Image 1: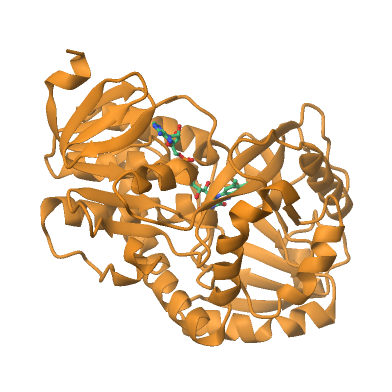
Image 2: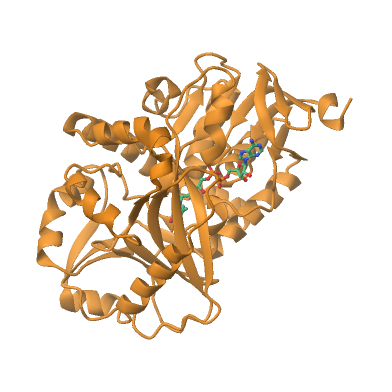
Length: 415
Ligand SMILES: Cc1cc2nc3c(=O)[nH]c(=O)nc-3n(C[C@H](O)[C@H](O)[C@H](O)COP(=O)(O)OP(=O)(O)OC[C@H]3O[C@@H](n4cnc5c(N)ncnc54)[C@H](O)[C@@H]3O)c2cc1C
């Protein structure tokens, strides 16, 4: 019998990314005995290399009505913001069709309200977690700036901005002069800006994961290194090496790899890896104060403690295709064009798997088939942002409390 076989925990969490660790942290604070499983605790997943944005204003789904007219153009550009590996198309097709449906007006409205419910309480949950793990000093609440090169693009986005305000986002428009005053390092080509008051960023996503992991360890969690192959029964996770890890409740927080584990108990979900890229410039030499979102070009630049991170792209090629770092190069080229004078010495290129559902809503809540199993995955572009709120909700479920907000819209039953 393995060490893992001996102990029955209250909660077993599969996945030690930002979401799984946040869930473990919340469960530990409720007094639960927790085991965390990951095949590579120090790994380099989405949680380690993301853009670091606490993007609370992003309460509309990625599938925006009208975007589909641009998709063909984006796909034709080999290094544009969207890429599809055609070999992956048959597998991705059901997801892509559901993505299309998510942009229909009724769905779009309902999804946005559900996203806003989560995003509007992010700081209630995230600030105590940052405080407890010692990360508050690297949390920068300086807003964010969306910039527009053309009047047309700015005008076209106005209905979405108005809707976001209805959903609770605080923002105000800036003219070209105000954009320059707000971020003088940007090229003087932006005719409009939108200042997002409540967006913030962190100094280093990898360090946040590290601090949270160490705090979870200090609070008493046991870490098991192994690859979860299946949920074997209501209280047992089967690992690839044949060992079992036992717990009264099992949380699946395995990011973009979660679908196979859900399937092992018969729950279906549409989940794709939306592969994103970035380049981090340790010696960039420019003074950006806050995260900047380049509206037409679909990329962002975040002034992290570890360098200026220029990132974006959405590539659908599955979990196993090798990274195409020419996408990082393409992002860097854009960065140099719009933030003149940046030094790219020592630039580090990176790719990560965003765990993306077609409706941009995460999967949170108990399995309808096996209620001892609880889901916490599918956060797409917002996993860092929504990590602590997801953890608070999952902790409610694990402790048998009424969740602090209704979990219906996030249920796996919607697939
Ligand atoms: C380029 C890019 C930029 C981004 N920018 C932002 C941003 O600014 N703000 C924001 O909020 N979000 C951002 N995101 C999204 C965010 O990074 C993700 O939503 C989030 O990291 C997902 O966290 P996770 O814990 O669910 O998954 P992951 O970080 O992928 O962690 C999953 C963990 O599960 C483990 N695992 C998987 N399968 C198994 C198994 N079978 N057995 C054992 N272990 C397993 C993996 O090893 C991994 O450690 C960005 C993502 C990318 C790619």
